[in-house]
Length: 338
Ligand SMILES: NC(=O)c1ccc[n+]([C@@H]2O[C@H](COP(=O)([O-])OP(=O)(O)OC[C@H]3O[C@@H](n4cnc5c(N)ncnc54)[C@H](O)[C@@H]3O)[C@@H](O)[C@H]2O)c1
Image (cartoon, rainbow, N blue to C red; front, side):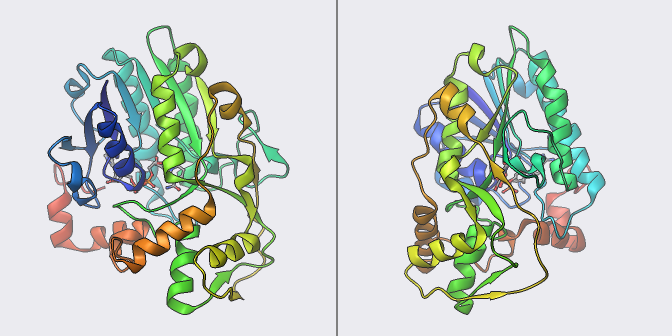
């Protein structure tokens, strides 16, 4: 297939593009390259990279594309949000634009990388029919985009919403703002894992390769099964309480389990039901939190990942880009950075 991946040079995109190329697909990556193009350097001779923006790219690039995997977004730190207006512009209007243009230009399949963050924090096991209670602009933008994109489904255009939960696992474009990665790094650097009380908060996690697998399954699936559908991406076995998560990580990387409480009581807790994707598409995860923690630990120790690279904390990096004229200039398109 001829596949366009937006945000293909990002944490998830770099692994997804590489795997799609390995499976024999032709891949075009459309990305602002806010974090550079080096995450795709190992496949640079096989992939077409377009430095462009989902808000204003020319739709001619959609000619002859069979599927669009829409991953581009401004990611977010709930405690430290970037400009909410820009987040909505990219993550809501930008993604709706991609889907609308894809339909108009005869693309058959479209997959949106939404997120389980649209559920917010609620009691019980949340499934695709649960009410959405997004808490941040990032989550609200995804919820709004989903609502506009699903009704685009018709017999020629098959849009699907994937809601992965928080990811873990190494990538050439690493993120150390993700919980499991933060915990591994903090055990290495300080010998302790900082935890918000009371440690009983539930949260689901999923390995990056189990997430890319979900995208690959959707593009192969019969539109009858996936068109206009929403699927949570993960597995019920990986809903875990934070204290247990920290213990699991220390054990996996074979370091003494030490922790310290910080901040006040955290009521951000939720559990997700991942049975729909399992039952409908026979989706099964292959990786555990233990595997992922070990992989990240090894990648830090053997320096295939540079944990000191400022680009590994996206919101901090975006702020630095905005404040540093030389970096800004390099990345601006039509004099616009964000
Ligand atoms: N990482 C997670 O834990 C996680 C969990 C659930 C869902 N997701 C979703 O998966 C997708 C990818 O996330 P990620 O972790 O790889 O994030 P990331 O920040 O590593 O990658 C996003 C990419 O999008 C690009 N981008 C940003 N704005 C753009 C624009 N206007 N036009 C073109 N490109 C632009 C960036 O340059 C970057 O390469 C996102 O949609 C995110 O919401 C991620």
